[in-house]
Length: 227
View 1 (cartoon, helix red, strand yellow):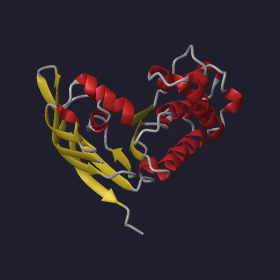
View 2 (cartoon, helix red, strand yellow):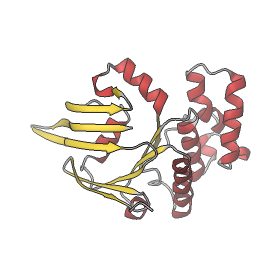
View 3 (spheres, helix red, strand yellow):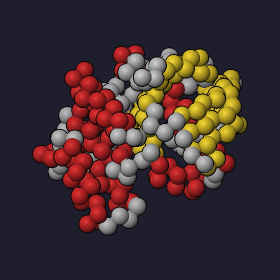
View 4 (tube, one colour):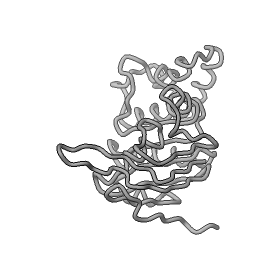
């Protein structure tokens, strides 16, 4: 599903160039569940931004399916991103003035999906995520765990093939974090490819494949044995 070849990304920090990604080679099959771990500044978030087409490499190549997306212009990259990729962030990024239902529905509104097609999909997700009673609540009326579930519902409402989660439990208490990670794992079990950046080694070890990064390089790629 994903293939990276010699991907590089440099940033300028004062007078010093910093290699955020240093000749990264990586392949990810459809349906995999990966965690990406490493110290701050190791390149984890830069890798996630590359996978999500939020940033462009300075060199190297990136294939998403059969398309070399690293060679696309911004408009074509945005189309690929909207069609195939969902995002879950630590800070939720919900729109404060919209209700839970409206936040979840927003990607469908932006792509022109008809109301009669939107409503059953939103209602199904609200029910599945235990949010029916909170559908008309604004984000500031929800707990952290509820807000993250709304963010996950928004990320998967268009049924993406790839779900990218950046510290999805970082702002949550342990109980809410457990609920959120179990929900993400359920979605992975249903076929969504899940890539999660985390500082929490306990969360990271749950993934069936674990990548360790340092100084922009992949240091270790560890997989569970196949049953």
